[in-house]
Image (cartoon, rainbow, N blue to C red):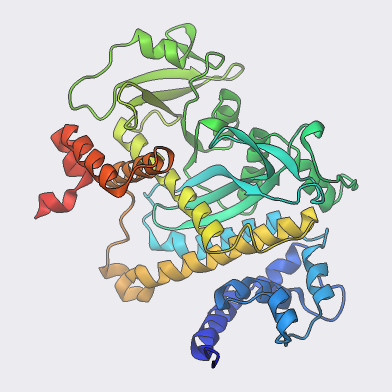
Length: 459
């Protein structure tokens, strides 16, 4: 049986694409600015390019070593010494890289009036060998409300509504020593390795502020910061607002979190019960102005909408920009869904979980940063191919910029998420799901049906 030949032309095109990407953004100089210096004769940027390209050409160092096809100029020990380096500041590297891409490429393609956003969320970074993995922990996965082994990958990303660029991240271990399964190494807290491990054992809301500060210091900024109810509390909202950015977030229905409303301190459930809700075809149920924070309260707007998954339930969003309309708040919050697509792409296609089996926390941090760099490469290539304004100055003036996310698109994203949850949790067949979808849409008011299917209205 003859072996299937490799398509060398495609492989060469991929390698050339990576090389152009590295040359355009001066990745070698950027890595040197973040202490990514060579210890011996091999340049770190060569090791980074090799690691980044492997996923695109379908290779791995392990299989190349086993089959004898490894032809690089460095040894396996050199490669792993690069990943295990405690001196390289990967948090700063990805932040500076993202700022360079956004400020010199993407931002120039859109209008200055467009609202750009930071998106903060976390995803489970599971590890099966936690007893040997440094700082491996039992972490709470709030998606299915269970403890699992591994880390929580807290991620900050930037988006203009079309292109999402991952900015930085932190693999969060448990803040409680009793929940840490793996070994704990001690480093001087003044070093990069010490600061990295200290941040890993910081609570998520506090680590979120550190990620934002790193992005701002790298020269990257946005108009709004989006996150879900897991990170939403008055302390974080006021802290982000003090940095010159507004917040749009989902509110946690907690009786302990209170807002100043008409001279009283009330939680969101009490505010909802005391007000008359809008009826009929309204896009939202309730909109009220409140004050958030204890020491230095700031004005904010709370918007309540009906939960599409449960008609008897409702969801609440808070926005510190009180000039925004309720529809605009809902539309901008819809951009948060892009980070869920990013997590899915990293785990399913960019081999975020299965590629790196290192036990060192430094190596895991380096691996996550390299996966983020892979996504930046794909995101910039996609924007170059889809946005006609990238073709030249003539096209920039004659072609409209790519459309931002619309209200109908936001509604469609929520519907897709609802259908996916129903199929996963209730184990519905495709026929049952189609029947449910048809019945659900038939019960919606006409303006929502038109928003879900604008092409049918145009026809």
